[in-house]
Image (tube, rainbow, N blue to C red; front, top):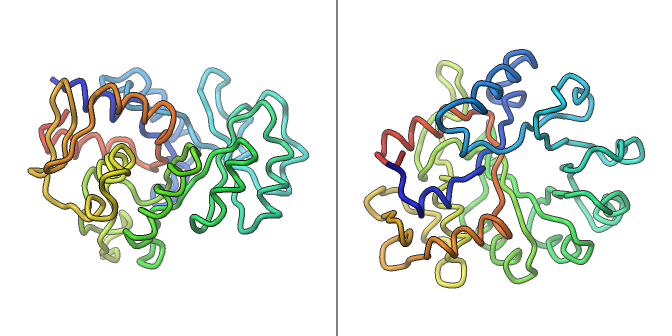
Length: 262
């Protein structure tokens, strides 16, 4: 049985991005998967369906979505689209995206922590890429910690994307292809526990690879000598560390089960 603290940490955590690499599923398959996950035993871990604006019309209306848009798409957005994700490389991009932010939840993907403050001033949320299908797409732990620290300092909620298929930091293939390159990837438990403990720990938790360093009870979740109460975790997940996008839902669930945490 899942403890209350782990439930708080995992609830609605994984936004399903099956359309995107390395899975790159056709729409019909991705939609069928999401529908099955919504009805399955671990539906409480599932978040939104991630879809590019160009394919939004193919998604059933009852599916909660987060829509990926380009800056050029912004003038065409329908008012019914309530959650969007866009990329910004500079302050001008942030200002342009902010022009459609009113009444929407907007995640702005940034290359580093420097744009977090202007994003916060516009009442938007930040998004940070944790990896991809190449070695150089994986940011150093120091960069991730700095991003989370800056979001905490500016009170900016954030989500993560890319490369977080595994609960704990580990070295595994970057794609599902035979002979795929291998790299050390960040773990989503590491990242979201770091968000809960950011005032006390930084990159050292992001670098943790041992499941024995973590414990989850109904009252709290702990990493080594540091702990966060279940109530704190609920607040962190609701107001600060919102979710992460993953092209796989089954892989994270299976590995959590292998660890005995689900």
